[in-house]
Image 1 (cartoon, rainbow, N blue to C red):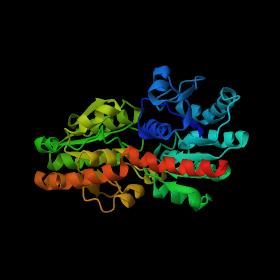
Image 2: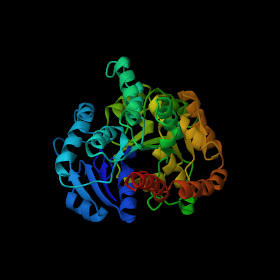
Image 3: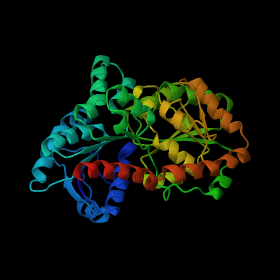
Image 4: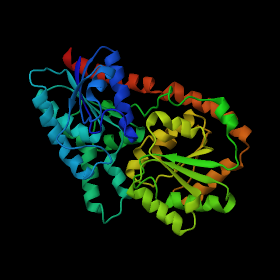
Length: 401
């Protein structure tokens, strides 16, 4: 089949969050013999990326895209229309069998192309993007605007009559069904990781020492990552374990700076280390030096729907995890003993971190290998992308038979 593959983030290398999946899904579709045309921003070495992935790249160059680009939100609003127009122009003379989109922003462009090309569309929704806006300051994102955007995002699959919808979680699938998307078109595939880049190494566990303990978080550091819960958790841990250190891996964002200022004002700044941005293939080396991985997300519709990548990566290397009770993660990992869930408050989160530090290292080690094996068997990218590819093939194949 000849497929058009749309995304709003630079195709490669991944910039964080859900962007990592695009390259692995593209590889799986090409491996299965499909001709893949990728419509995406791609500023770095486009010719090499085409050769490496076996794709035809159609670069979006009207303006710079990416989660750290200037005027990001305005660009996100304008991008679907611009991408759809570019795809029509670039693909003149080509006949596609179907369209696959990554994320909600590209899904709008895919919906418009379905109407123009009259081909089936598979929307791969990796988060509930506008649901995260609930954690933004009200002056930056007024609540009535957030409500309108959230309703629109959930309506996209039904609005454009998507033939199939891949979702990152059961929770997101439930919300889309409640918004009117037919349940039989919804296919939760979850979110994966690269088992080759995040191997389980028993020797790394043996080398971990509890003096001083290192509590680590990596991510894009948006508003929902670092607010009151994270700050109060650091304060709670500091009371009982003044030797504990918190390491944060990610770019220097407004949210990170606000969090660091708050910690400094409370006399906690010296307990934090900001490691800056670390490329995706190098994250595992950082995790190997940690004692606990943490996910102190604030509560919102977006975070409840998220299948948080860092949880999977922490488990893959055998790290104990503490997370706020995000619905998607709590449902999927309900029986996973290497995760402990707090309430949505920093005191509870800090106590959960301390509960892991009180566990003997031998007890944590006993839980680590089985947890790593479970995520490797179920959530390695090869497994997740095979599930996605099967839905794409069945959907597009049924329409073209």
